[in-house]
Length: 146
Image (cartoon, rainbow, N blue to C red; front, side, top):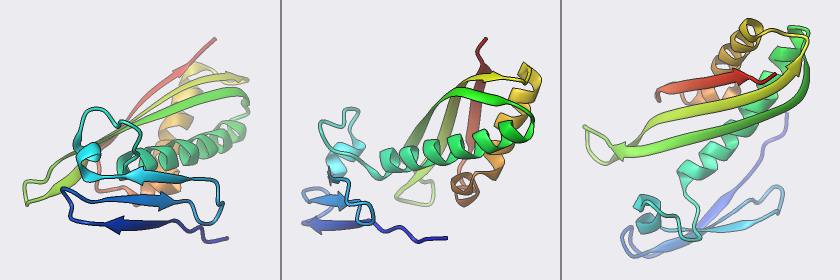
């Protein structure tokens, strides 16, 4: 399997500095980052490690769920996956990821709600990004839409 690369160029202190995150492997985009915008309620044109992690998690989860549903005999018409990744204070000092909420809505034929929910839970546990984030509480809100 391939290795993918991203890089960040940073200038300045945590409080006053800023940087640019580059998706190096794909060369698709470069995004601005700064700690004040990371810690603010509004991103105002900058991304954050939490948003990038949410993007990675939703895409990984959608791929894993599609495999789980196909194995259960389902035909995927559409999956809509979102992730809310929260940053908060770490009791040991500094910051930590406090929670991740995955939300999935699926249009899938060939499976009932029970099979969809079982596949959704299995995908939450077995997606490689979920496996990498075992130190963070991950919750799931999954609904099969008919």
